[in-house]
Image (cartoon, rainbow, N blue to C red; front, side, top):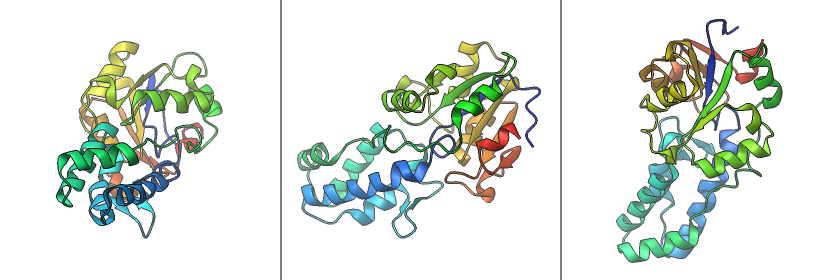
Length: 237
């Protein structure tokens, strides 16, 4: 049971919290490796997966790896570095990336972890509590995801990796959302599946940190949380 009586704003992470992280990203990173090896003409899976923090045997992202909270533009730059270290010059690396790099489909691969429409309406019951999303993904795919899930009209504010604010684990996203929605950070809850989400909430002064076990982090990874639940569905229990 999560007591939200003193909470006026619930800030959700997106991937791993609202939607299935591995359905979105596991296939993407494996396809990227295939296409980069084809375009670069050399093996790069090992160093690419190491940089991304991806376990190809378990087909899961590692909780403190690059896939978890690194913006896409930064991941692309880091992938270019992997290619250069594999022996390509900068021009050849960029050519390989131009062929292979594409974002995961934010509609087809977005599998909600509960009935998000019912969740948001339940949290907003009475008209007092607001809903926001803070994500390390970019705004265009985030907007498409929320629209495809039919909840874009229920979300009061969104802050994304390419909006110009310092990303997770910094607290800037939390402070920005609280400012534009007129909510004291102490009356905001941050809900997420990773240590970076919890660190963001703590740094931003959030009054409640809720860890969820539906994404990349297990209970030992979410020690900074005030409470840990199986999934966001439990917020309405």
